[in-house]
Length: 256
Ligand code: ATP
Image (cartoon, rainbow, N blue to C red; front, side, top):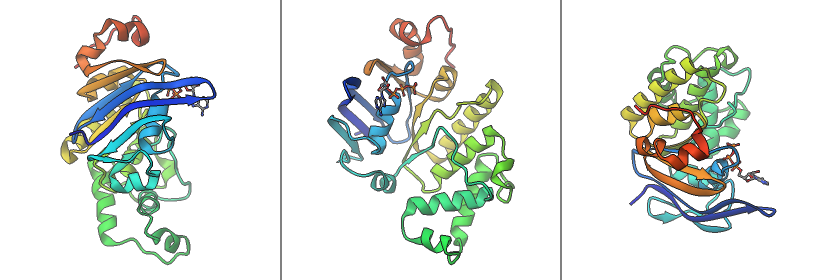
């Protein structure tokens, strides 16, 4: 049984068919990619999985239960984490505060209001979790740094740390390489591989950077004009003529 899945998803926007009869599944601990050209429907599918959009047809399931009608925060509490493509930073806060604040927003246990009123002190276990994650992501010792001092690559890792604070069972990564150069993307891929192996969460990676998808994922789905054109083991998918025609063009990719 898949951990997170969607079956028969249709989504239309004012006459535009963004998704048609799409299915996708991520198993426990699996690294799955989702690629496709601009406008293929990747973000729409991502948002249907997260609960930001309600599909017109089809079902989204998590751990065997139907979550199609659950709001975003209930899905987050079940164990679905996400990162944002645009790094959302609260200027003026330290890296550690940033993680703690984000963690409390997601917990939704009222601690956030205490924080806003200056009444809530982070628990030692929360601080430990924060510092452990920063260490694992190669940002050890950066907890007290102002968030603005980070490079874009480091900010992306803080986004990942933020998603992992609640120990999700699956994490949806939204174009983590966006704006990064090749060296930064390679470093990000190495870190993602390491932390995923350590912590064992499932991943759905939505990416334009096919090299990152090729190096990180085991299986890949390909969308084109709102329809799945293929899915399977990533090296086979990258070699598929339909994928090359629809997406890769003449770009030669050597899957690792
Ligand atoms: P990109 O790689 O450029 O981010 P994508 O694969 O994520 O593209 P989507 O953003 O999901 O594609 O868009 C799929 C289709 O749905 C596109 O034709 C897009 O214009 C349309 N679309 C997406 N969101 C909306 C919306 N809120 N209102 C109207 N049309 C939308």
